[in-house]
Image (tube, rainbow, N blue to C red):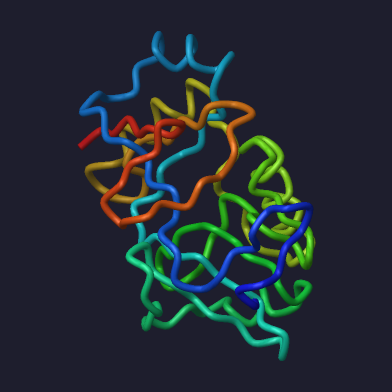
Length: 190
């Protein structure tokens, strides 16, 4: 991805940027709070993995970057699946158990989706997963599913809680890895 690429005046993502980071609230997700937030926020389960952005390169290879902007050096078993996507595609997600699970598509080929809301970026991530035969893990959980996740967390350590993303908000990469988003926040059980 060249530094001079533009699409409708929006700078195209380059390697080594800092992805949006949800603000920590110190609060646990409760039924009442989540029921209230559903009207204004996209709610996705918070997988307890490594935050990774994955690029599809022009030569059908992939590049993985951790949340602090450097190359992600651990093995991703399903990485080759994502190389089937159009060159230039950028996915934001988590690596858990050695597999990459995207929760949003930031760019699909030459189409920059950062000005779209998280509902559109997540919907495309779900469609990409289904098309590739990969498991989609970030559907908005029902209240019963949240109860089960909270009950299972101490034993499985898979789900930390939820990330709430303001509907209609653009994806704004950060200037530093410690910056937190005003549009995303997390509610955790631990």
